Length: 312
Image (cartoon, rainbow, N blue to C red; front, side, top):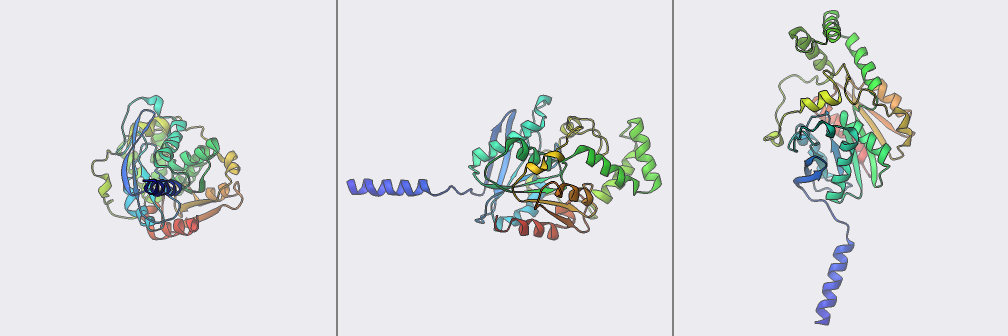
């Protein structure tokens, strides 16, 4: 019995001493206001990669097929922010505040025992990522990838005006006219914004192919988008209208990659401005791509991510 007890103790000790390994699967994590859905794919031995999707009010499912290919290197963690995708959809507008979305990361880390992780924030996900790094000063974050990020609303709006000025005169006139009138449902305005989207959001022709993980997932939550951002990509009137973290970028001391499309609404020129604020950070430009890099040029985009994460 003493021998058996000693063997049992040794087994428990060794098992407890070994670091926990995150396993593929999906589930829910409780956060303020409800539950958020997550999914883990991949069995690679590298430090996990947490993906923060765009929006506000978007969902993660469209990116799962592409980003999952990184799972050969490391576990990849997707999640839907509260109010979108497979997550709960409360209607309490007091929940739609940036600090609460930032707290979701800590909730996921605790639930999944993510002592170490890499972070990729895409578009508005970059807003959540930069706020997390600046306000939480978290331990265990090995690197951050900002993919077409919203880090400064003023720079985002400046870039939108520059990009609109590069479109045809009739398209410019339609956008400017209906923006000034605050009429966002006119067919001429819709056609003009479609032109903007084709040029700068996703340049790949053809209808999007719905990912299997989107089955049963609610569509994008426009109420959150309008509350936090505004009526259109060109007009920030919500809680993010004064968002500005450029002056705080230097506080991020881990390796950083800024990656954007050649024709991204998060313009390459702006990524180089951000790069200057973080010594040693890198910029990758994805050719033939707008804002939706995982759709427009997944090969170059995922290669850039994989190369940056190599060894992290």
